[in-house]
Image 1 (cartoon, rainbow, N blue to C red):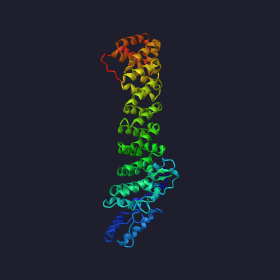
Image 2 (image 1 turned 45 degrees about the vertical axis):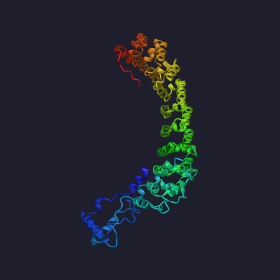
Image 3 (image 1 turned 180 degrees about the horizontal axis):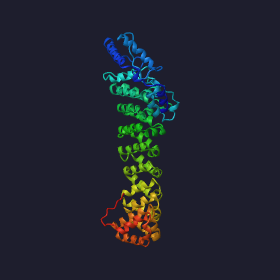
Image 4 (image 1 turned 135 degrees about the vertical axis):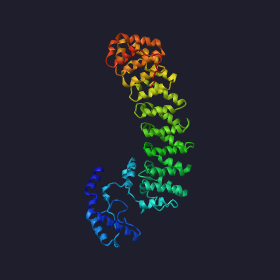
Length: 483
């Protein structure tokens, strides 16, 4: 696109000020003022389409031809002076009325099979639509393309002016128009409901929002049936920034009625795909926040079913942590036990370790004790790992502190020294020394005595941090950082 613009700009030069002498400019200004007084219209933009672009070859001499005629007579009655446009139509190389629709609609499979004709508004020009919009006392349906031609309607509703016009009609017209519009948007193009296209469009979504506000329960049921008919298309809508807003609006609208089942069932079916997408995950979380425990039961079951898959995904682990904060009742205990049972596997995963840390932060004594027991025998190995060391540090500030220190002590003085000199393990030893001195002085002294035989080896590399900590001593009142 940039290449096309640069080529066009190179073919057409901007008129320069040195084409006219000062006297010519003064004379031209005087002539235009006289024309304005006699004709009452000033200058005309006929043929220019009210833009800076024009059709035809650009020539500086063309501008100069008009100027002498006006200069000679002072009043040129046979011509209306037309200001020379700066750039031709082709220089922009983009039809902005269709760019928006094309970008978003193409996200649906089958879109490219549609033969949309841009700006096919049955004779309505954008300027006419804008003029109608600006007339607040009268909103006309004359500028809307045929409701039977869904393709043209999609293109119309996907423009800023078309969207605004439809919103005004919904606001000021009677319910008959809303019914007609509903019939149009629930029809399908290439086996995809029109409303699916509009929901993901930056302008079309505003029409959908206004329509949703105008619908009764029966009409909302029709919309919900259409958008949830195809599971893949529903997921695409939820994962789109504009579409997600429409889904959230519908959830909020029907949360106290039986229609919410349309949403919960569809979210359940696409749960895994939604949870590994940042925008889609927000839709699921929003639904959980809006609904009570009974209504959310299906979503809770989905979170449990896909827990381990999501926990090992960069986005999915964030989703699982958000679900942990929201899941209630028996499902919550089931989810936490599932995570604790797989603590060893998750602790070594780049994403899964965050889920284990999240559960430990809940300070559930039963669950934390279970995690501590699961990791017993693995603490030394985890201390050498980037991800595992984070979990070990978290265990040191929670209930499994005894499991951790005892596990480290059983590995022997030599391996303990290796952990202290490791790029990740040294943080584990530092945390262990600080926490045990504050919470369990007996364990602290045992740990300290185990490190002393190899104290000199800690003076270099990563071990010097542990060495300095031991030599300087740890204040009794030092605040233990649990982060």
